[in-house]
Image (cartoon, rainbow, N blue to C red; front, side, top):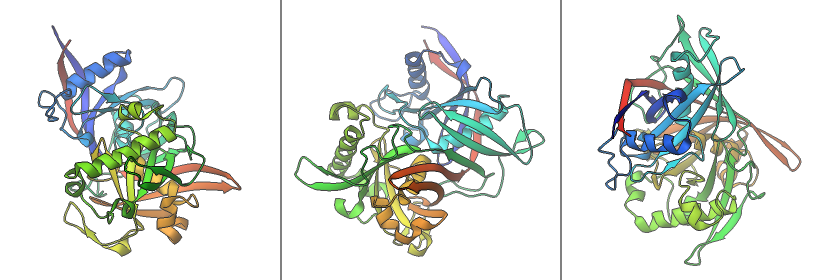
Length: 381
Protein backbone atom coordinates (compact mmCIF):
# COMPACT_ATOMS: atom_id res chain seq x y z
CA UNK A 1 0.00 0.00 0.00
CA UNK A 2 1.13 3.55 -0.68
CA UNK A 3 -0.18 6.99 0.24
CA UNK A 4 -1.86 9.23 -2.34
CA UNK A 5 -2.54 12.93 -1.78
CA UNK A 6 -5.48 14.56 -3.53
CA UNK A 7 -5.93 18.35 -3.60
CA UNK A 8 -9.38 19.59 -2.66
CA UNK A 9 -11.28 22.52 -1.17
CA UNK A 10 -13.77 21.79 1.60
CA UNK A 11 -16.72 24.13 1.30
CA UNK A 12 -20.10 24.83 2.78
CA UNK A 13 -22.73 25.24 0.13
CA UNK A 14 -26.12 26.33 1.44
CA UNK A 15 -26.99 23.92 4.27
CA UNK A 16 -24.62 21.17 3.08
CA UNK A 17 -20.87 20.75 3.01
CA UNK A 18 -18.25 18.59 1.37
CA UNK A 19 -15.15 18.59 -0.79
CA UNK A 20 -14.76 20.24 -4.18
CA UNK A 21 -12.28 18.57 -6.54
CA UNK A 22 -10.83 19.46 -9.91
CA UNK A 23 -11.57 16.46 -12.09
CA UNK A 24 -7.87 16.32 -13.00
CA UNK A 25 -7.10 15.44 -9.38
CA UNK A 26 -9.17 12.26 -9.59
CA UNK A 27 -9.02 9.22 -11.84
CA UNK A 28 -11.12 9.38 -15.01
CA UNK A 29 -12.40 5.89 -14.15
CA UNK A 30 -15.67 6.25 -12.24
CA UNK A 31 -15.23 3.16 -10.08
CA UNK A 32 -11.77 4.39 -9.04
CA UNK A 33 -13.19 7.84 -8.34
CA UNK A 34 -15.86 6.29 -6.12
CA UNK A 35 -13.24 4.24 -4.27
CA UNK A 36 -11.17 7.39 -3.67
CA UNK A 37 -14.22 9.30 -2.38
CA UNK A 38 -15.22 6.52 0.02
CA UNK A 39 -11.70 6.48 1.45
CA UNK A 40 -11.44 10.28 1.70
CA UNK A 41 -14.75 10.51 3.54
CA UNK A 42 -14.12 7.47 5.76
CA UNK A 43 -17.18 5.65 4.50
CA UNK A 44 -17.83 1.91 4.63
CA UNK A 45 -18.01 2.47 8.40
CA UNK A 46 -20.79 0.38 10.00
CA UNK A 47 -21.03 2.94 12.81
CA UNK A 48 -21.87 5.65 10.27
CA UNK A 49 -19.46 8.07 11.96
CA UNK A 50 -16.91 8.18 9.12
CA UNK A 51 -14.30 8.28 11.89
CA UNK A 52 -11.43 7.33 9.56
CA UNK A 53 -12.09 10.12 7.07
CA UNK A 54 -13.26 13.68 6.49
CA UNK A 55 -16.99 13.01 6.28
CA UNK A 56 -19.33 14.45 8.90
CA UNK A 57 -21.35 11.31 9.54
CA UNK A 58 -24.56 12.66 7.96
CA UNK A 59 -25.88 12.78 4.42
CA UNK A 60 -25.71 16.59 4.34
CA UNK A 61 -22.01 16.59 5.32
CA UNK A 62 -20.91 13.73 3.06
CA UNK A 63 -21.15 15.25 -0.39
CA UNK A 64 -18.64 15.73 -3.18
CA UNK A 65 -18.33 18.15 -6.10
CA UNK A 66 -16.17 17.37 -9.16
CA UNK A 67 -15.51 20.25 -11.59
CA UNK A 68 -13.73 20.63 -14.93
CA UNK A 69 -13.51 23.23 -17.69
CA UNK A 70 -16.22 22.85 -20.34
CA UNK A 71 -14.48 22.75 -23.71
CA UNK A 72 -15.38 25.53 -26.14
CA UNK A 73 -17.64 27.42 -23.74
CA UNK A 74 -16.52 30.66 -22.07
CA UNK A 75 -17.32 30.74 -18.38
CA UNK A 76 -18.61 27.19 -18.77
CA UNK A 77 -17.78 24.27 -16.47
CA UNK A 78 -18.87 20.67 -16.05
CA UNK A 79 -20.03 19.71 -12.57
CA UNK A 80 -20.65 16.22 -11.22
CA UNK A 81 -22.28 15.69 -7.84
CA UNK A 82 -21.62 12.59 -5.74
CA UNK A 83 -23.54 11.60 -2.61
CA UNK A 84 -21.17 9.53 -0.49
CA UNK A 85 -22.95 7.10 1.82
CA UNK A 86 -21.78 7.29 5.43
CA UNK A 87 -22.00 3.59 6.34
CA UNK A 88 -21.18 1.79 3.09
CA UNK A 89 -18.99 2.24 0.02
CA UNK A 90 -21.99 3.33 -2.06
CA UNK A 91 -21.55 6.57 -4.04
CA UNK A 92 -24.79 7.76 -5.64
CA UNK A 93 -24.55 9.96 -8.76
CA UNK A 94 -28.16 9.71 -9.94
CA UNK A 95 -29.26 13.23 -8.98
CA UNK A 96 -27.90 16.66 -8.17
CA UNK A 97 -27.56 18.67 -4.94
CA UNK A 98 -28.78 22.25 -5.20
CA UNK A 99 -27.01 23.34 -2.02
CA UNK A 100 -23.62 22.12 -3.20
CA UNK A 101 -24.35 23.63 -6.63
CA UNK A 102 -23.75 27.00 -4.96
CA UNK A 103 -20.07 26.09 -4.44
CA UNK A 104 -19.38 25.35 -8.11
CA UNK A 105 -19.27 28.94 -9.43
CA UNK A 106 -16.98 30.26 -6.67
CA UNK A 107 -14.74 27.16 -6.86
CA UNK A 108 -14.47 27.48 -10.66
CA UNK A 109 -13.50 31.16 -10.42
CA UNK A 110 -10.99 30.50 -7.62
CA UNK A 111 -9.34 27.77 -9.72
CA UNK A 112 -9.01 29.74 -12.96
CA UNK A 113 -11.72 27.95 -14.93
CA UNK A 114 -13.67 31.16 -15.69
CA UNK A 115 -12.32 33.57 -18.34
CA UNK A 116 -14.68 36.57 -18.21
CA UNK A 117 -14.78 37.84 -14.64
CA UNK A 118 -17.03 40.88 -14.28
CA UNK A 119 -18.03 42.98 -11.31
CA UNK A 120 -20.13 43.06 -9.27
CA UNK A 121 -21.45 39.69 -10.46
CA UNK A 122 -19.94 37.02 -12.70
CA UNK A 123 -22.19 34.48 -14.38
CA UNK A 124 -20.89 30.94 -14.53
CA UNK A 125 -22.58 28.46 -16.87
CA UNK A 126 -22.65 25.15 -15.00
CA UNK A 127 -23.50 21.94 -16.84
CA UNK A 128 -24.56 19.33 -14.31
CA UNK A 129 -23.53 15.95 -15.70
CA UNK A 130 -25.86 14.06 -13.34
CA UNK A 131 -29.02 15.62 -14.76
CA UNK A 132 -27.70 16.92 -18.11
CA UNK A 133 -29.11 20.31 -17.12
CA UNK A 134 -27.63 23.82 -16.99
CA UNK A 135 -27.45 26.02 -13.90
CA UNK A 136 -26.45 29.68 -14.15
CA UNK A 137 -24.68 30.86 -11.00
CA UNK A 138 -24.53 34.60 -10.34
CA UNK A 139 -21.39 34.94 -8.19
CA UNK A 140 -20.44 38.19 -6.42
CA UNK A 141 -16.93 39.34 -7.40
CA UNK A 142 -14.64 42.22 -6.45
CA UNK A 143 -11.12 42.94 -7.77
CA UNK A 144 -11.27 39.71 -9.74
CA UNK A 145 -11.89 37.54 -6.69
CA UNK A 146 -14.98 35.86 -5.27
CA UNK A 147 -16.68 37.75 -2.46
CA UNK A 148 -17.75 35.33 0.24
CA UNK A 149 -18.70 37.75 3.03
CA UNK A 150 -22.02 39.58 2.94
CA UNK A 151 -25.28 40.29 4.72
CA UNK A 152 -27.52 37.55 3.25
CA UNK A 153 -28.87 34.97 5.71
CA UNK A 154 -30.36 31.57 4.90
CA UNK A 155 -32.28 29.31 7.28
CA UNK A 156 -30.14 26.55 8.75
CA UNK A 157 -26.81 28.42 8.56
CA UNK A 158 -25.54 30.71 11.35
CA UNK A 159 -24.54 34.24 10.41
CA UNK A 160 -24.55 35.85 6.98
CA UNK A 161 -22.59 35.67 3.72
CA UNK A 162 -22.70 36.92 0.13
CA UNK A 163 -25.80 35.97 -1.84
CA UNK A 164 -25.42 33.59 -4.80
CA UNK A 165 -28.32 33.33 -7.24
CA UNK A 166 -28.86 29.97 -8.93
CA UNK A 167 -31.05 29.69 -12.02
CA UNK A 168 -31.93 26.09 -12.86
CA UNK A 169 -32.71 26.24 -16.59
CA UNK A 170 -35.31 23.86 -18.03
CA UNK A 171 -35.27 21.75 -14.84
CA UNK A 172 -38.02 19.37 -15.97
CA UNK A 173 -37.08 15.73 -16.49
CA UNK A 174 -33.73 16.02 -14.74
CA UNK A 175 -33.45 12.27 -14.13
CA UNK A 176 -36.43 10.63 -15.85
CA UNK A 177 -36.54 12.97 -18.88
CA UNK A 178 -40.18 13.72 -18.03
CA UNK A 179 -41.61 16.49 -15.84
CA UNK A 180 -44.42 14.10 -14.86
CA UNK A 181 -42.74 10.67 -15.05
CA UNK A 182 -46.02 8.71 -14.96
CA UNK A 183 -47.89 11.19 -17.16
CA UNK A 184 -50.31 11.88 -14.30
CA UNK A 185 -50.46 14.58 -11.63
CA UNK A 186 -51.65 12.10 -8.98
CA UNK A 187 -51.13 8.33 -8.68
CA UNK A 188 -52.30 5.88 -6.04
CA UNK A 189 -50.14 3.11 -4.64
CA UNK A 190 -51.06 0.24 -2.32
CA UNK A 191 -48.66 -0.64 0.48
CA UNK A 192 -47.97 -4.12 1.84
CA UNK A 193 -50.46 -3.51 4.69
CA UNK A 194 -53.21 -2.72 2.18
CA UNK A 195 -53.22 1.04 2.79
CA UNK A 196 -53.72 3.11 -0.35
CA UNK A 197 -51.75 6.34 -0.59
CA UNK A 198 -52.10 9.18 -3.10
CA UNK A 199 -48.78 10.45 -4.45
CA UNK A 200 -47.53 12.97 -6.97
CA UNK A 201 -44.23 12.30 -8.74
CA UNK A 202 -42.64 15.40 -10.25
CA UNK A 203 -39.15 15.56 -11.77
CA UNK A 204 -37.76 19.11 -11.76
CA UNK A 205 -34.09 19.65 -10.78
CA UNK A 206 -34.48 16.28 -9.02
CA UNK A 207 -37.42 13.86 -8.92
CA UNK A 208 -39.58 13.97 -5.79
CA UNK A 209 -42.49 11.85 -4.64
CA UNK A 210 -44.97 13.93 -2.65
CA UNK A 211 -47.35 12.58 -0.01
CA UNK A 212 -49.87 14.39 2.20
CA UNK A 213 -48.65 14.48 5.81
CA UNK A 214 -52.14 13.61 7.06
CA UNK A 215 -52.10 10.37 5.04
CA UNK A 216 -49.13 9.29 7.15
CA UNK A 217 -50.78 10.34 10.41
CA UNK A 218 -48.53 13.42 10.61
CA UNK A 219 -49.11 17.16 10.92
CA UNK A 220 -46.32 18.32 8.61
CA UNK A 221 -44.55 20.25 11.39
CA UNK A 222 -42.40 17.30 12.52
CA UNK A 223 -38.68 17.59 13.27
CA UNK A 224 -35.96 14.96 12.65
CA UNK A 225 -36.28 13.49 16.15
CA UNK A 226 -39.98 12.91 15.53
CA UNK A 227 -39.33 10.85 12.39
CA UNK A 228 -35.89 9.26 12.77
CA UNK A 229 -36.91 7.58 16.05
CA UNK A 230 -39.79 5.72 14.38
CA UNK A 231 -38.41 2.85 12.29
CA UNK A 232 -41.85 1.61 11.20
CA UNK A 233 -42.78 5.05 9.88
CA UNK A 234 -39.44 5.39 8.08
CA UNK A 235 -39.95 1.96 6.58
CA UNK A 236 -43.33 3.03 5.23
CA UNK A 237 -41.85 6.22 3.75
CA UNK A 238 -39.05 4.29 2.11
CA UNK A 239 -41.52 1.74 0.74
CA UNK A 240 -43.45 4.60 -0.89
CA UNK A 241 -40.20 6.06 -2.26
CA UNK A 242 -39.16 2.70 -3.70
CA UNK A 243 -42.56 2.09 -5.30
CA UNK A 244 -42.41 5.58 -6.84
CA UNK A 245 -38.91 4.84 -8.14
CA UNK A 246 -40.27 1.88 -10.09
CA UNK A 247 -43.32 3.83 -11.31
CA UNK A 248 -41.02 6.60 -12.55
CA UNK A 249 -38.80 3.99 -14.24
CA UNK A 250 -35.77 5.11 -12.26
CA UNK A 251 -35.45 1.53 -11.02
CA UNK A 252 -36.69 -1.62 -12.72
CA UNK A 253 -37.81 -3.25 -9.45
CA UNK A 254 -38.10 -2.59 -5.72
CA UNK A 255 -34.79 -4.27 -4.95
CA UNK A 256 -32.93 -2.05 -7.41
CA UNK A 257 -34.71 1.01 -5.96
CA UNK A 258 -33.01 0.29 -2.62
CA UNK A 259 -29.61 0.67 -4.32
CA UNK A 260 -30.54 4.15 -5.65
CA UNK A 261 -31.31 5.93 -2.36
CA UNK A 262 -30.80 9.53 -3.51
CA UNK A 263 -33.67 9.66 -6.05
CA UNK A 264 -36.53 10.04 -6.08
CA UNK A 265 -36.55 12.00 -2.86
CA UNK A 266 -39.46 11.46 -0.48
CA UNK A 267 -41.34 14.57 0.68
CA UNK A 268 -44.44 14.94 2.84
CA UNK A 269 -46.34 18.19 2.67
CA UNK A 270 -49.00 20.04 4.63
CA UNK A 271 -50.82 23.39 4.68
CA UNK A 272 -49.22 26.32 6.54
CA UNK A 273 -49.12 26.07 10.34
CA UNK A 274 -47.09 27.73 13.07
CA UNK A 275 -44.12 25.80 14.51
CA UNK A 276 -40.69 26.25 16.11
CA UNK A 277 -37.71 25.55 13.84
CA UNK A 278 -34.56 23.65 14.79
CA UNK A 279 -32.93 27.04 15.25
CA UNK A 280 -35.53 28.00 17.85
CA UNK A 281 -37.19 30.46 15.49
CA UNK A 282 -40.96 30.84 15.64
CA UNK A 283 -42.31 30.27 12.14
CA UNK A 284 -45.81 31.69 11.77
CA UNK A 285 -48.40 30.21 9.45
CA UNK A 286 -48.76 33.60 7.77
CA UNK A 287 -45.06 33.56 6.78
CA UNK A 288 -45.27 30.43 4.62
CA UNK A 289 -47.36 28.94 1.82
CA UNK A 290 -46.65 25.24 2.47
CA UNK A 291 -44.84 22.98 4.91
CA UNK A 292 -42.43 20.40 3.46
CA UNK A 293 -40.27 17.72 5.06
CA UNK A 294 -37.86 15.59 3.01
CA UNK A 295 -35.94 12.40 3.60
CA UNK A 296 -32.23 12.43 2.78
CA UNK A 297 -30.61 9.01 2.51
CA UNK A 298 -33.25 7.48 4.78
CA UNK A 299 -33.43 10.18 7.45
CA UNK A 300 -35.35 13.44 7.75
CA UNK A 301 -33.43 16.32 6.18
CA UNK A 302 -32.65 19.00 8.83
CA UNK A 303 -33.46 21.71 6.27
CA UNK A 304 -34.57 21.27 2.66
CA UNK A 305 -32.63 20.16 -0.40
CA UNK A 306 -32.43 23.05 -2.86
CA UNK A 307 -33.30 20.84 -5.80
CA UNK A 308 -36.27 19.74 -3.68
CA UNK A 309 -37.26 23.37 -3.23
CA UNK A 310 -37.11 23.94 -6.99
CA UNK A 311 -39.23 20.84 -7.56
CA UNK A 312 -41.79 22.01 -4.99
CA UNK A 313 -41.93 25.42 -6.69
CA UNK A 314 -42.53 23.81 -10.07
CA UNK A 315 -45.04 21.27 -8.71
CA UNK A 316 -46.99 24.11 -7.10
CA UNK A 317 -47.69 25.53 -10.56
CA UNK A 318 -48.86 22.27 -12.13
CA UNK A 319 -52.65 22.09 -11.70
CA UNK A 320 -53.82 19.05 -9.76
CA UNK A 321 -50.60 17.89 -8.10
CA UNK A 322 -50.77 17.35 -4.34
CA UNK A 323 -48.47 20.38 -3.92
CA UNK A 324 -50.75 22.53 -6.06
CA UNK A 325 -53.73 21.42 -4.00
CA UNK A 326 -52.00 22.52 -0.78
CA UNK A 327 -50.74 25.93 -1.89
CA UNK A 328 -54.04 26.92 -3.54
CA UNK A 329 -53.97 30.62 -4.48
CA UNK A 330 -50.24 30.96 -3.66
CA UNK A 331 -49.49 28.94 -6.80
CA UNK A 332 -49.95 32.11 -8.86
CA UNK A 333 -47.30 34.10 -6.97
CA UNK A 334 -43.78 34.69 -8.27
CA UNK A 335 -42.36 33.57 -4.91
CA UNK A 336 -43.32 30.43 -2.98
CA UNK A 337 -42.42 30.35 0.72
CA UNK A 338 -41.66 26.83 1.95
CA UNK A 339 -41.55 26.12 5.68
CA UNK A 340 -39.01 23.42 6.57
CA UNK A 341 -37.29 22.13 9.72
CA UNK A 342 -34.73 24.94 9.86
CA UNK A 343 -36.84 27.86 8.67
CA UNK A 344 -38.13 29.20 5.37
CA UNK A 345 -36.93 28.74 1.80
CA UNK A 346 -38.22 31.07 -0.93
CA UNK A 347 -38.19 29.75 -4.48
CA UNK A 348 -39.30 31.01 -7.85
CA UNK A 349 -40.53 28.93 -10.77
CA UNK A 350 -41.50 29.71 -14.34
CA UNK A 351 -43.90 27.08 -15.69
CA UNK A 352 -45.57 27.38 -19.10
CA UNK A 353 -48.84 25.55 -19.75
CA UNK A 354 -50.16 25.21 -23.29
CA UNK A 355 -53.10 22.82 -23.36
CA UNK A 356 -51.79 19.44 -22.23
CA UNK A 357 -48.17 20.50 -22.64
CA UNK A 358 -46.49 21.62 -19.41
CA UNK A 359 -42.96 23.01 -19.49
CA UNK A 360 -40.79 23.96 -16.53
CA UNK A 361 -38.71 26.82 -17.94
CA UNK A 362 -36.71 27.90 -14.88
CA UNK A 363 -36.41 27.59 -11.13
CA UNK A 364 -34.54 30.16 -9.02
CA UNK A 365 -33.12 29.96 -5.50
CA UNK A 366 -30.66 32.00 -3.45
CA UNK A 367 -27.85 30.47 -1.42
CA UNK A 368 -24.53 31.30 0.23
CA UNK A 369 -21.21 29.45 0.23
CA UNK A 370 -17.94 29.57 2.13
CA UNK A 371 -14.49 28.01 1.96
CA UNK A 372 -13.82 25.91 5.06
CA UNK A 373 -10.38 24.55 4.20
CA UNK A 374 -7.94 24.07 1.34
CA UNK A 375 -5.46 21.22 1.35
CA UNK A 376 -4.76 17.62 0.45
CA UNK A 377 -6.66 14.51 1.46
CA UNK A 378 -4.53 11.43 2.11
CA UNK A 379 -5.65 7.91 1.21
CA UNK A 380 -4.02 4.52 0.85
CA UNK A 381 -4.03 2.97 -2.63
